[in-house]
Image 1 (cartoon, one colour):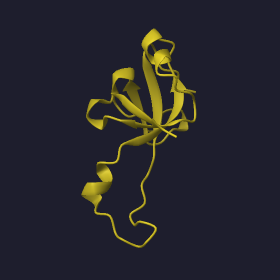
Image 2 (tube, rainbow, N blue to C red):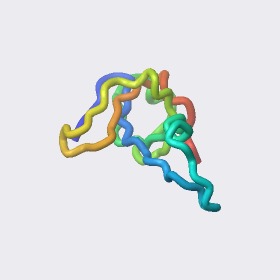
Image 3 (tube, helix red, strand yellow):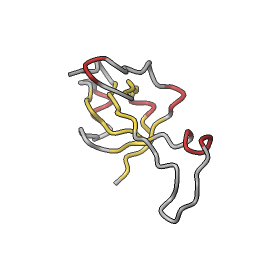
Image 4 (tube, rainbow, N blue to C red):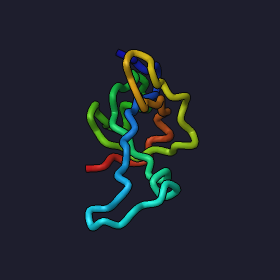
Length: 92
């Protein structure tokens, strides 16, 4: 298991469908703009605790300010380290 330090969280990126439910094809460019991830692990910093997120939550994040991906480490794929400042919203 990967455990983030401080005010960071580990996110598993959510793959987006290439078509909508009604059959409209979404271009690759548009799909890259959707920045959603599932919280896998949360650091112990004070600031991230204020966000009131929990493991399993789906969040929107700023993809341009994420840390390196952790692909291949500990059997993980499509995983990013995200600072608390870059978690923008929790989807409910």
